Length: 214
Image (cartoon, rainbow, N blue to C red):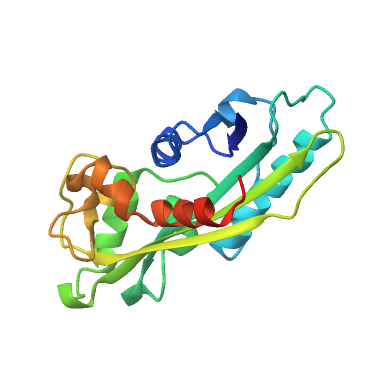
């Protein structure tokens, strides 16, 4: 079985990826590698951040003499994702996770990010609150004690709209404010089964699945 190292400690993100990929991989996360280096996501694009995370982790693992592979293949999956709001010229974008505290390196609380978004959009009518979730996945194959292959990139988007107030108890991040195109409820109301069919991450993973030779 192929080992897939998901380059995150975000349990919500891990759960989504595992649900979307099924039982085809032995999934590990950064929680399984406590000594893994922290990667500062300071690139200007989602693709830049995803690539940086995947490549730096691949370099670390490929040079670590303690790391051995018992499977036929080992892959690193790193993603960067966020919300792009047209009325805010694409913000919060790559700063989505720390939107409420852009002068800090750590992420903000979801409630604080949502409150700031609503505050900035308070004078924007509903019909002009178009937005999208975007996800870029970088996939790198590593060769222990040697090198790693150039990353493959996969981009997925989910178009929708930001509503006037949060609705729903499920999901995370901006899910309570985002109604995907063609739906009448937010991601936080629709539930994981529906979200995993429509989401930006689901679309990026579908591209990955279709284009990679497993």
